[in-house]
Image (cartoon, rainbow, N blue to C red; front, side, top):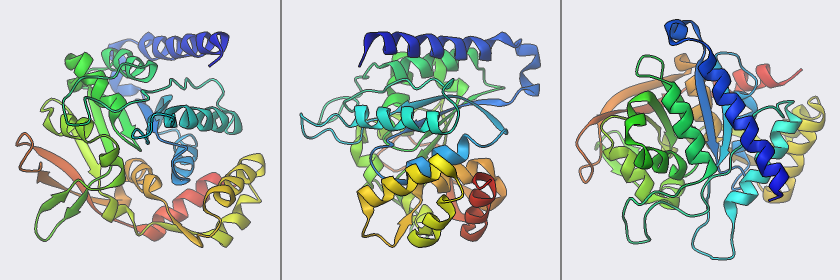
Length: 306
């Protein structure tokens, strides 16, 4: 990455955090909650729809869009750099070039056989700095649309920030009848060590959107492309990405958008309190158990279309 470009991004990150901190904590409850999106944007196309929706709302103050890795088993693959490029392109198309986009770790947390050694990165440091300006009464929201490497590493390096964060994660599967967890989902397998770490972190408030709950939210290709035509350069970009990556798919599951819609519109999702998996620290977390698919679709298009 160009050194001058890196320096500029770092300056923007510091400015964003300082602006968040500038308002006195006595007015914390009057402010919008700060939010960081952490995305493996180059992996599949639904991240782009989730980012687009989150950057077109005023309920939360989005202070950063960070990139996370999604391939780590081939040395020549640098997936976080690919996601970083996608993030930087999207903020330009969305008219948010002011938004910091710190890059995340290229590698997952710990070792291939386990462990919780953190992986430092500009993204992890950004989360740490932002969380330090938050507090338990006005928490920083961190939304992990991919592997939770950056969030888990940030907490591992600065454990005191956990109490200041509301974490939302897309991943896992959950059998509500048997009350059984399944960690064999894409995001979790990309960094199982990080997933276990945040499950075990008692101080961290955690909400999970399981993959099996998000799956019903699909967009049909042709109808989506027609609507993209009304969105100018952004719509053309989204169409081009779908055609380049998944041209043969007539529908696409908007996994990440399901989580973002549930955060923005709590009335469109049902939650329940469940225990963590038996191999993890025993504690209660929140899990999404159902979503209103039609209303989520309606909300997305009514927001993004001009």
